[in-house]
Amino acid sequence: MNMARIHFVASRVDSAEQPVALMKKRYGQTPLDEADVIVALGGDGFMLRTLHRVISKSMPVFGMKIGNVGFLMNRYSEDDLVERLATARLVSLNPLRMDAQTESGTETSALAINEISLLRQTNQAAHIRVLVNDSVKVEEMVCDGVLLATAAGSTAYNFSVRGPILPLGTDALALTPISPFRPRRWNGAILPSSARVSFEVLDHYKRAVSATADAYEVRDIVRVDAYEDKNIELKLLFDPDHSLEERILNEQFR
Image (cartoon, rainbow, N blue to C red; front, side):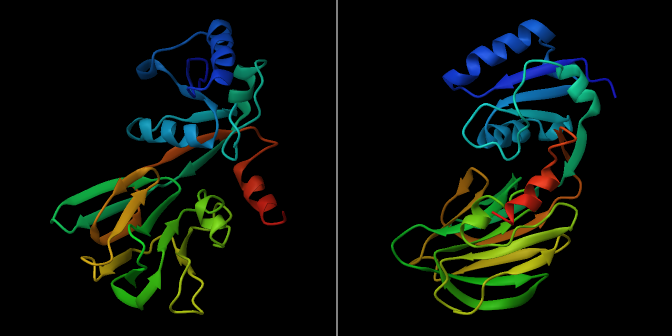
């Protein structure tokens, strides 16, 4: 695949201004609609925003770390970019789709690359029923929230609330409670990527809950259906010696 036509994007931080200017001057700046690949300079948050921006284009993205966090990023170097792109390893990911229903009857759909999370909106704990493939698995969970994470997102918010790290290629999703009070011994589950997970908010008038798909938030929800959208494919490029699978594996031994 030809990778010579590059479209550069960069995070809006001072540290990214000079590198992206140098890159554009050296390799040129192809308009997005004519490019073969996007090179994103920034951190993981910027990479997620870039992937959301190009979801409909099915265009590969090669990230280079400029920000503080760079789990999804390659090392930054101005040299040999065309050669690096030519030898880069392609990792394909499917995002999660969130279909949310609100208290007012509104229905909203959004995509998540890392996770879909439900969080209490007030000082009162959320009461949530959890269903997998229309079968009730947790009748009533009293908690701060619950999330469903992809393998790529399992090292992010999911890991910070003691969820499992999922190596890429396992075709699995992590279902993880957030500060659960009841049931006391339920620590979550690893589900097949084909699973459809539903969350029903109990007593939603008194115990309001919001839902987020990555950074997109819907408030006052009553139900969320979450599943992996196999019709959408995200393409990430990594240097051969620094693959995403290796990073996920190494994260489990830190």
